[in-house]
Image 1: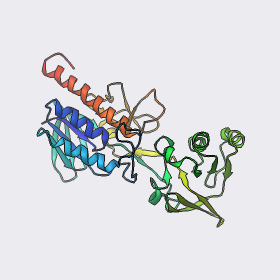
Image 2: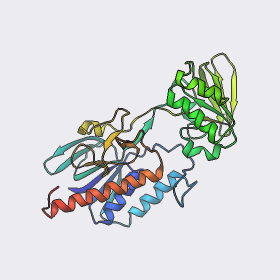
Image 3: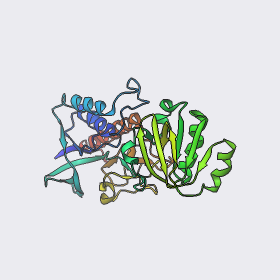
Length: 307
């Protein structure tokens, strides 16, 4: 029986395991090895690590966990989780069963890219970007396209035009511009291309959008705010409350609606927030917050002070 099992080995999961391990808790970190930011060469807005490779951060995080013999890291995929009287039982893909008193879900989200646009996934994170907070500075002064027809996607064009570029075009991929955005785009001088995009090709700094009528738009960068889904179905299977956008609902302590289950990183958010933050530093902070409060919960239980 572990004190804590952390599912997910990104910044949120690694930091949750580190904080719990330093409190001498018996910790198991399970990582499927498929991080959301794997395509990205750099991460940003992490004090002292701005521009640092995210894969290197994960490597160092794992290396630092080896200093704590009470923390075990294992490459594994969790296929099932169920409550039991003293905690939870987890079943892994290889048939192994593990038990824990508390559970931290740090499984993250997956970007659901439009399969109708050939080449989009190959350039995602390497010329096609999802977030101007993460990539805006690096695309300053570039010719940019914003791909998408939903209002949040189209409004992203106004944001990047205001902060980073005077040459922005919206590609609505065969759809009309949302009425709420049409006037604002015109006022900002942002061009609109409604012809469907069939293929995205090229490389970072030189991206070509091939349209259905054969025309080619030459851009230096593309922003595409793709819809997301949960990387793992565990939260739903455990009965955790899920918000309309698919994020797991947590409170200020990173607790889900299921007692004993915490969630951290972009897999979860407070109901009061409009979106889950996708920054590495906020994911790490969520992991620390979850570990601190679940440790206090364990301490109170062991001391007979109530949950």
